[in-house]
Length: 461
Ligand SMILES: Cc1cc2nc3c(=O)[nH]c(=O)nc-3n(C[C@H](O)[C@H](O)[C@H](O)COP(=O)(O)OP(=O)(O)OC[C@H]3O[C@@H](n4cnc5c(N)ncnc54)[C@H](O)[C@@H]3O)c2cc1C
Image (cartoon, rainbow, N blue to C red):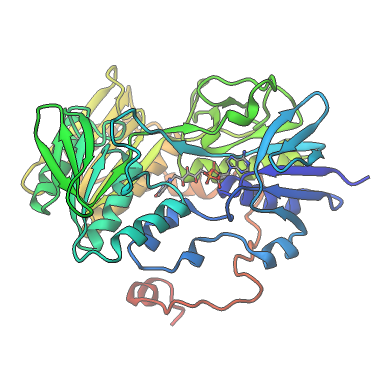
């Protein structure tokens, strides 16, 4: 009898796992996908909010995709509980399904702090298709919407950037002493704060929201702990996320901060896998595990889990913590152990130019980095890519460490001399060259004309 794989979720873990299963299995299995919303990329939501793409371009699967990969898609449906002993799961609609292998890829959800007024209309999170739709609807009738965002974290700023592109009036309140507290140190964040103030974005750090009340018309009045009030049409709550673990209650599937998985992406039940935002998995060059709720980790987890569900024995080397962000034209990146207080640092800073680099070392090994610089600075962007490669490969810098100390803008020479690109090119996640992914749905042609950079960098002419 054909194996039955059930996948819960419709994000990058789920779609990558489906493709991996189909690429690696020896005989065709049965795949059922269960998700409570259409399969889509949350990363694409800011482009929809900025009106650069329509809603449908955020979708990562459709009927053609399911047909081509022979997937039974049960969308929208919700899984309520899992019984690992019986290899069954229960749907909220009443059906019970039997599986041979299960992949839990339920992602995470926004956390709402207990602030009086948080349930008022016009106060919302900004995490899902529904949230984006609701914000577009609320703001469509306003000439220059005033938006106040509570929380100055990575995802919040991704959405803030989209609102900035729309020309909205923006303010941010952050409880911690500086913005992006889980991505940048105090000096890197200072660059971002001064940049934001130049761009007309109001920033209030080290303060909390005490209450939100309804003012005139669509106005919300937000009171801070010092008594100051700020008026806004919309309040976005971006104060953090939590993994979607509710369906595990009583299942015996082991969790810590998230679902604990080994380097095969297996939970404590060997036929039950987990990945992405909901999973706590291996970290690159470490024997620890961590939550890395970012897209690259989700994609890796999905590909590894899918291959192993299809009978392979592929071990995941672990994820690298990385956040790369455009804050209204200022590019910020942090990698690896960027906050390791025991590490030696090489730092350069130019406040007027909004340039900041902090590289962290244990002996001659770079273990983490923070880079801030203008988005238009191509040198900065390529250096960010090269630093990521050095960290991914764990290359020891030897005498080149002193070179970087003297020339923090010359990452290219050590990167080339130490053959980091060759090491990366020889590394494959799944132990073989990438296979064609057939991303286009059903022969659909591109609907967006190539822009000038496509013509320069991608065109065959
Ligand atoms: C606005 C936004 C922008 C982002 N931008 C970036 C970025 O630029 N770079 C980056 O690295 N990361 C980014 N991220 C984070 C990235 O999108 C996530 O890390 C990634 O989506 C996680 O993938 P996943 O498959 O684990 O979960 P998800 O993509 O969250 O998918 C999980 C799906 O499972 C569904 N589900 C949950 N519980 C159940 C259930 N019981 N039954 C059925 N279905 C269920 C959920 O509704 C959801 O559709 C962004 C996130 C957001 C919200």
